[in-house]
Length: 218
Image 1 (tube, rainbow, N blue to C red):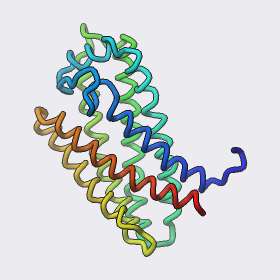
Image 2: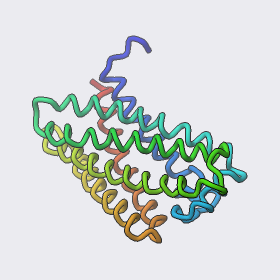
Image 3: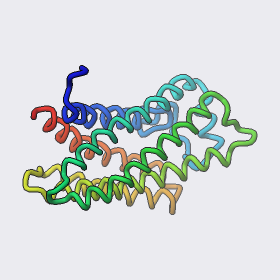
Image 4: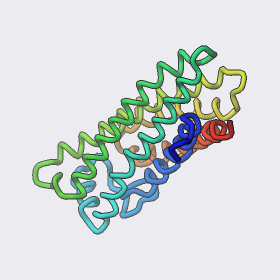
């Protein structure tokens, strides 16, 4: 394993990271699949009750795995963007990369808030505001990831060796941007927007897998 090339490692990161991240996005407590129920994400009391109930241990584990998966994906994506240097699309992808980086950092902080709810340091007595901040932070990060992901995929789509997946990924990223805005402006639609966003993340994951397979095969 110590002799693996940087490119191959980046390829594995682009395959494993997004798959694990999307999987946890769907199966985490209160996630898209509704495991443990689907409380209104703007209802801090309901969210905290979910994370401190029967699924407490399950929630703690998923909260710890999400940052690992996202950072793994980020590592591979950073290498991919750097590999575009000197060619078409590099300027666009380079602009999008910091946005994705900040989004991943914000999601990691959000996972810390969820972890706090799971272990009981975020409680019903005095931390409702903290739980609400988590919702706002998650949507801001979703917006940033959507914009950054769009720029990276759009940049990749301008290259001669690009596949149709890059263009589809760019379109899915636009939808992610829209869902983040709708979630904040019409909070009653937040659960529906999370489901739509989950589908878009699957599309982006498929594209990341195609990139990763290309790197590994070289």
